[in-house]
Length: 232
Image 1 (cartoon, rainbow, N blue to C red):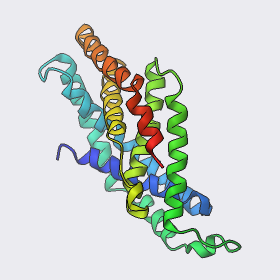
Image 2 (cartoon, helix red, strand yellow; image 1 turned 90 degrees about the horizontal axis):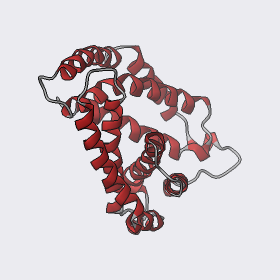
Image 3 (cartoon, helix red, strand yellow; image 1 turned 90 degrees about the vertical axis):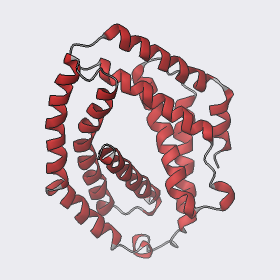
């Protein structure tokens, strides 16, 4: 299915958000094992998804598209091996060990925090990182990518942890979604331009400039700043 790899990556990110919410409990080695396993599976899925997105930006019969299609076949083979082999088995085993830990035992000298308290702490940390990134100039692809990651983590935290929070805290500002989407579309072109294949760089650069202008307008407007202030 076309979006299967994308959906799997989103699921992995959601697991990472939930794991980050448990940081105050200090679960130690079991939590670190899950983090390591999540990174391993995510790293195996990333090339195939990046190539899928890159191919949507190219004429289907172009030499560059044919070269990337061959790379995608190799990347998809890695995905199948990962999901049918040791990396996914390691993630399942690590998550099983983590889920058997009781929070009261993880912090024997302190009362276990409520789920709502953990959610609030995780979102506050993600909001702080996003605000810090948003206040820095994002003029280079690397700076925009770091900002995109910070905003996306905040967005995912708001979505994933919403059921644990008070109703009035569950809203996700639309401007935050738009900023993440605009920065993601720009990042897609940046990744393609970095590839060592024969490209119509003039056309792609024009597409990149349009997407960069849209992202910059969003980031320089007051909507994103208001959205970050609205997150509690």
